[in-house]
Every structure is written in C-alpha cells, then in structure tokens.
Length: 397
Image 1 (cartoon, helix red, strand yellow):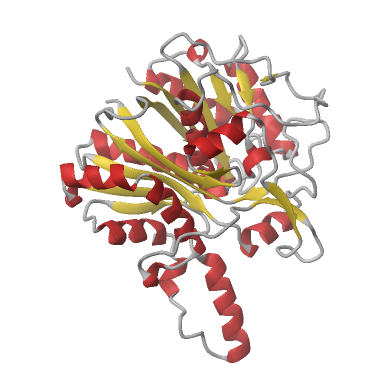
Image 2: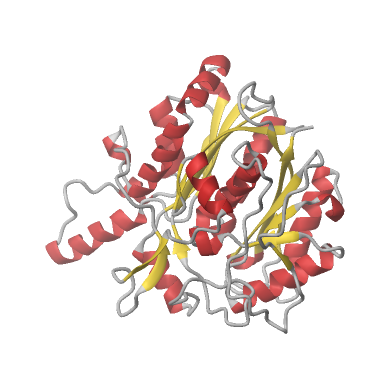
C-alpha cells in the first residue's frame, strides 16, 4: 500500500513553513545555529533554536513549548487537516507523534521551584511532562477519537512514528494520520549530552577529521498521511521503511554499522528498490566520532556505486525525537515544487576528510537531483540502544 504525504507543516532553526525552510536548506544556510550560554553551566554552545514568538496553545491545560512548536507546524496545514476530518470523520483520523522531551523543561523548572518552596506552583500539571502529551494535545484540539499515541525511541522516535502511521493505514484502522515529531531545547538533554562529552563548542562538522560532537536543535515536523494522493500540492509518498535494533550498547553505536546497514537494506526491500535507485541520502551525520565512523561504513558497504549524500545537522542541529520526521521533511522539500532546479542539501563542513573513514559522495554545489522519474530519496536516523530507522520518500507510483 502506498502512503501519501499530502501536507507538511514544519518549524526549525532554518525557519517556518515550506518555502522558508526549503530556501535556506538548499542554500546551506547555517545562520540559525547560534551560541547560547544559558543551557550548560560554564559552556557556550551552538544551538538550533526556533526564534520569535510562538502561537499560544488554545487549550491551557496542554501548554508547553513543545506543544507550541507542534501547534505552529499544525497551523500551517490546518485547512488540509480539517478537510480530512470532514471527509473521513474524527474517529477515522489518527495521531502518531515522536518526541523525547515533551514538556520536561517546564516540569524541570517547576520541580526546582518545589524543592525551594516546599510545594509545586499552582499552574503545575504532572501530565505536561508525559511523553503522550503531544498526541493528546492534537487529539483534544481537533476533537479526534481515532488512535492517538507517541513513540519515544530517542533519535529514531519520529522516523518510527511515520512507520507506525503507515501501518495504521495498512491495517485499515484509520483513513488519515497526523504524523511526525517534535522536540524542544531543554536543560535535561543539553546537560545530558554534555556529560557524555558528545556536544561540540563549535558548529558540528560531520565526517570531518576534526569533528568534535553534536549541536542540539529543536523542531516540529507534521505530515498528513493518507492512502490517496492529494489533488493539491506535490504527490510524494513514503515508499519504504526499515528498522532494526542491534542493542549493541546503551549509547554507543555498533562500530561495524551492521544495524544501520540492516535498516537501510530493509527499507529498500520494503520499497521494492535497490541501492542504485536512490538519488540522494540524508545521512544521520551527527558529527560524533563513533556515529560518523559507523554510518560511513554502512553507506559505503550498501551503496557500492556511491550516492550523493549530506548531513543537514549543521543547519538545523540534531533535533533528537523530531529528527526522523524533520529530515524526512527535508527530503519532501527536495522533491517538491520549492526546488525547481533539483538542488540537493549541501554538506556543510570544513572539507577535511577523515582518512580513517570510507570516502562518501558528499553533496557540493555541483550535485543535482536527477530529473528522471520516479525520484527516490533515503533518510537515516539512528538512536541510543542501537535503534535504527531508514525511510524512503519519492514520487508516488
């Protein structure tokens, strides 16, 4: 069954909305990555923050910055969402969201307050920090009664959300799914990754000999997925998906890259494609020593003829639970009418290749997406615990 991605709302460090994000993504614009000294004591770190005023969540009991980001993305495609609800009924529209932070930043502030004051502030709500909060917010706001849940598998969360959404459609449990991911900058994740010595003081530098770790970002990306192509907008589909869990280590990836290779191979098999069909690969590309070494091994092994590829994280930051959906959204934008020249997201780095890694065909200004139809793009997401997801988007059959 083909799952069509008929609408897309997104907000991240690159901007808000399809046109804004596409223009900056394809230009290799890293201006959204700005230094911040208020997250980790004693460190000034580049972060991919969403700047400017966010819309107020219409249901006060669901207030959190995480839900504000999600609401900002949803408002961009609200007419398409309302039309799907009108067509299928609220009981036949599902919500599947990936996140890893939910409302934990607000909860952390309230817990800190309670430790000093001996009681929580009057506005404190325990469920604002529940991982289920983003899906519950969308379901309550839109008055949906179909399946609504959150998947939280660290940095593969929203990649798995798209996979799960397609499965709901395949099983006939619904006729449309709001699916994607959202994660917010917060002290918990920034201090946690800093403690792991995984965060760089400079803009991240994927696959470079000088790479020194990740930058954290925040984002929301929300798709409307259905069984039918929309009469409006581009006809782009989730053609295939693959997942694996090699459980190599609680935080370190398997250095052989076997789990990543498995996920990519499964995605190709699921789509009925071979590696030669893929015109571009969005790398997970976190710029940590171990991830880039592992991923380059897996990509080199699978794509024996090479494939144009790049990491978009120097432009957006690593948005953790939102990364899978956000980078699928980047592939969607490459295929959309916002990219008439067939540009590919450039690989932004210092150009100093690591001699210990296999050579990859990293995107430069000379690369263009082939105009031959159908076009197919792959996006990788890898997470703690050896959790791996690969998605394939392309022109609908």
